[in-house]
Image 1 (spheres, rainbow, N blue to C red):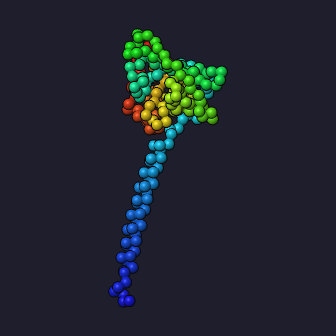
Image 2: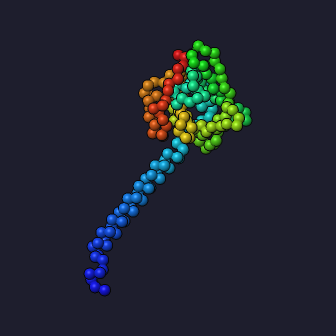
Length: 193
């Protein structure tokens, strides 16, 4: 074999370099897409711990991502009470369309799913349907809270009072956005003063 028939060492090095660069780039792109998909599919982080007795009581719905079951509901409030069996009575109080309409309620039951944090519940208003309920953000004094579904489609901002200061509300909205919730869809719920 003569030298004229052998591939040039420079040509082989350049071809190998280009092929390796292309494979490395494709691998990085694939890894980035997988990491992004994993972040979106991983459930959002909850608060570290919820003191259940402190969390019980009335929580006014300040804002939520609207959906069919709460459409037209105003003056909404979630009322939580511990039961002797360890479950939680969950009463959703509301008025239809106007704040002077009669008060109505839906009675449900909740139970703590993650007993280490108490921040992940299951909630059931109609058997056999149940939803996961994540406590995503919580005031250190238990004056406001943000809860949502793990799929990030629905989220609620709750308060012990019928209003929240604008800076507190905006801080909650910003933290929910960081967790991937659709905060641009949040609608404030009219409440009695």
